[in-house]
Amino acid sequence: MFESAPITRRLLILWVGIWCGSAVLTMFGGGLPNVFLFDPWQLLHLHFSYLPGVLGFVFLHDPYSLFHVLGNAWMFAIFAPEIERLFPAQAFLRLLLKSTLWGVGFTLLMAWLMPQAFSNPILGASGLVATVFAASAAMYPQRSIYLFLFRVRLLPLFLVLTGLDLLGFLAECAGQERGVAYTVHLAGVLVGWLAVGGFQRFAGPWQGWGRKWAQQKEQKWINRQRQVEQELDRILAKISREGMQSLTAAERKFLQKRSQGGP
Image (tube, rainbow, N blue to C red):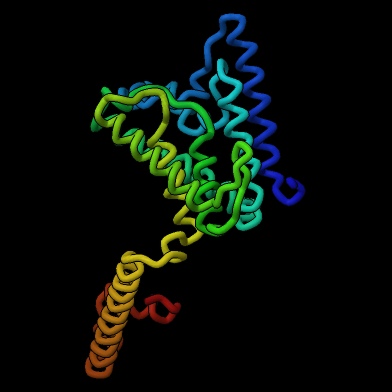
């Protein structure tokens, strides 16, 4: 299962190993090092000793909860190997890093806007799990998996769980929910969904938006090329009338860039 997914295998081993170490440390009264805690409140107040936790929090799970690490590991083991094969080696690491940083950015934004609701420390790899889950649902929407003895289709399960995350996020905004990193989950979902072109795989109004955006981008490129050609014609005409010595430094730079294949 993991022969072609070495990063997935190493992450699973690392998560379990770090959890065991943190559980033992906690049993003897030790605290969790800052390197494994993403604490939005501390970071927004410029306590830079917590900065390593921006990346380190995805490696540590609640030392008091075996379910936390095993639940994330189980979900990651189901969905991550296939996504790693789609994004081999460094591409998969970049995907996971992007998910982590988007989750951190979204959480910091919400903690800045609503500190009373989003300033709790965060740990765990649930954002990475959300990323591979979303990518799998977009790629294989008709696939079925067994969930507690029930066979369910992947896309409906994904939509239900994402909807619950969204409801939890709204409840957290209202100050009625604490303890779950909904910001990290939702950021991970968005990263995974976009990474495999999720919106392009399903019919919807966003397809028209995408076409309109592509047309606008193409038109901007055409306009830019037209301006470049007009400027080139002007400079060549100036050379024909007055010679190369009449060119300004900016015009010489423009010609040099064009000769090297630049726009």
